[in-house]
Image (cartoon, rainbow, N blue to C red):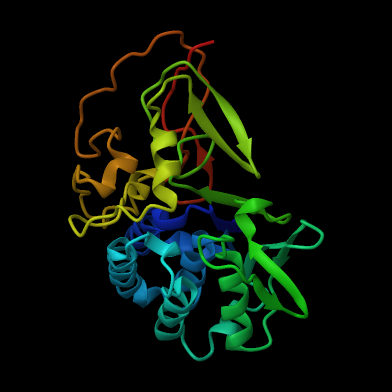
Length: 313
């Protein structure tokens, strides 16, 4: 088995998408997870990566916390920036209740967290943690958006740090094949696949996303949702990672259900029905260029394009 890494993109409250992908990986990608050597992430992505690595059985508890956190933030008069509301303290409380006592030992040299230095404005990938508190500080630093989350950056090792998404929103590790996961449509392994329209790919701090030349492009809406906790209690997190991983592990894989089209599931509203046997509708201007997500072969050993995907030239 080739050296495999999992990397979760920075995405704010759209981290609920990552939790859905993590849940699907646990159910249908157990063989893959056993071969994952390292995890990486920025901002909300680093939080999900840390839970998947150190406490995978608490994915659902993390899901519940995210919903409650979003509801609580939304109830504030001015959201997260409401005077007197401590956004970071609430986030820390969630980490302390979910991460196990030996989380730093489990994460040592296996979890790579993207953070940004306020002085040099350079990125750093931290993978060494001397204590659980050390790990929590790095996770908080990776999630700190100035003004929105507070006015004082997180102090770590004598320096001040902010959200890693500013400088590296999707860490790609130097050794092995890094499988990328993002709630934004683009050149990523596990991500939404939007209807093809005229657009271009934009590299946003190491994340290639699709920006369509329309006033209401799906990715533009998703960007707005990052800091606006509009998730609702209806439905599960998006779990189309099931078929982004090939959808099978021999004959033991259960049949996937159709993603619910609820408000917070907007991030995957255009995905095809995984239960449907109907062939995909033809698209114009065939260029045979793989776009969106890739599939893992049934034995999870190789990455292959799921099917021809066409885009305008």
